[in-house]
Structures are given as structure tokens and as C-alpha cells.
Length: 98
Ligand SMILES: [Zn+2]
Ligand SMILES: [Zn+2]
Image (cartoon, rainbow, N blue to C red; front, side, top):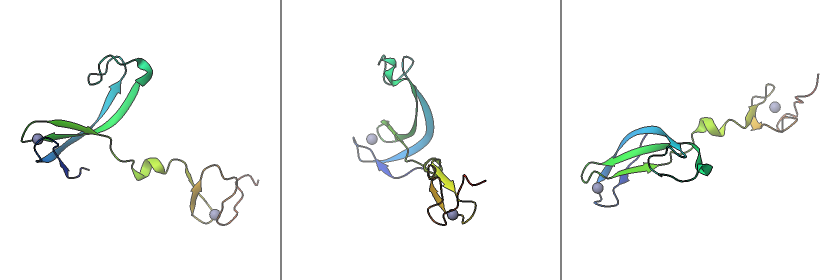
């Protein structure tokens, strides 16, 4: 993981540190006392500038894995399609046929 990002302050290349889950809500240490409407966790990628010490958080890109969740693989033809099709749109395999 990681990509080349440049510090907004000093234009130095920022170094990727890690991915962390941040807890939002009343215990959020970044957002302070924002209402619990924001409760939940977000995943962020943390980068630090080694020149001026600035830390930046970025939302990581969606991985292929997470975009696959709503997809179903047809057992007949092996193609992937959206999960709510009652039949495979490629080969017309019927999931509800007994
Ligand atoms: Zn910097
Ligand atoms: Zn199929």
C-alpha cells in the first residue's frame, strides 16, 4: 500500500506509515466532541512529512475485495454479476430452479 503524496506545507514527499481504524463519536480524538451521529469507525491511511512533521490522513481507496461483496459468481458459467439477479445474465442459469 501507499502512494506518492507531497506535503502541502513544504512540498516534501510524505512517508506512508500505516492504516488505522479510527473510532468516531464521543471518543474521537481527532474530531473532538462531535455528536454521536458520526459514531462508527473509519479506516484511514496515515502519512507523515519527514521535513516538517505534518501528519495527514487519507481515506484509502476501495479495495477490489470490498467491491466484490455484492457480486455473485455463477456456478454454471463462472461469470460474476450483481447479487440480486434471479438468473445469471450471461447463461440464464436459474438460481431458484430446484
Ligand atoms: Zn512538510
Ligand atoms: Zn452463468
